Length: 460
Image 1: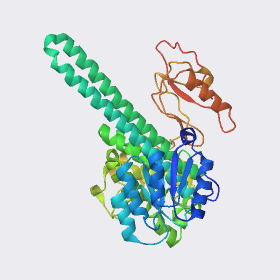
Image 2: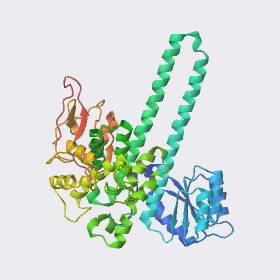
Image 3: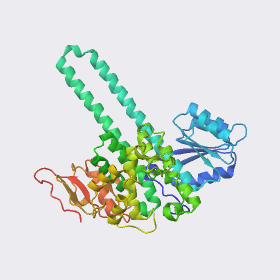
Image 4: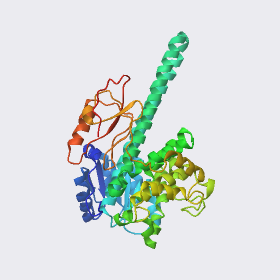
């Protein structure tokens, strides 16, 4: 995707019609922001001062506020501090056109801004920042809703415990039902969180044809290597999530830099490139559940012999998940031409990685890699379905079928996450996608009932 082209409007935000308040004392800046945001489906409100912005917020709710730093009477830092105190759920962005570090720090510390953007801005960059900020706000609201639900259910359990002595059998049954409900709610929260990460990981793939589906391939191979090394379930999950977001730090790369092989980069581009693991980790750090994932992303370019970056770690000082991720990502990077101009065949990439045992890679990880992926085998190769599953086309889907694997479009976008039970609405949407101009024939992995009662026509 060329940065000069307008960014496509996200489907989720088209429906939501998020309200955005822009505050700046320069009318031309406000006009520019309105022209940029309105075509994306946002409702845009304008205010030419901090006081006017506060007055507007008293009568109209805003999901996100974009404020200039330098304004008369009330600067952006003071304005955003007021917004945080009175409307804490409103996401706050700061526009700054000058290098006033103290003012920016004041906005960060007192206004708790989500991001600051320098003027002049890049349209696509600011649209991405706005989209990410709104998506994060939605996730936080959903998390608070589920926490409130859990607290409510806990309160109900406490009330129930007060009368449990009346009937021991009834007490046990009620507690089991409550525990099952809480476990189910927690499981759904985790499933939604992972699904959101999978969708988010497709953003880099939308920037470059070479990276379409790349993150999902890397994540799947990293998970298989981690399992072969007998890591515990939490470590395997962290490695998988890190694979999905390992290129997150490249989100602000220009198209030229994103598509340039590492071995041909200029000194300037190489300097920018070497910062992407650290930037990716910084973007993940605010998410408390992804602290270990952030460590893995930060250390993915470290080498076992200590010659990597950004921290020059070596040997077992490198997090285990990062050692696994390095091998999985390099295997595919050699094949798609992101490391060198010449693309390698899977077998050649396999041999190249194995020869780097003890240098670039942990020998134990290389051993597990060889167990998982023997020469001649590679991700994406055609393979038969596992026992208990079938690969079918959308025309063979029936309500009640369970999808066993993430359903990914040919553009690398997540259409449906694993463990979804199909209903009439989902089946209709999948069939409409296949028939759309951007669609393609889907191969859908579903569970087969015992005795083969699902009559399916297999997808080619």
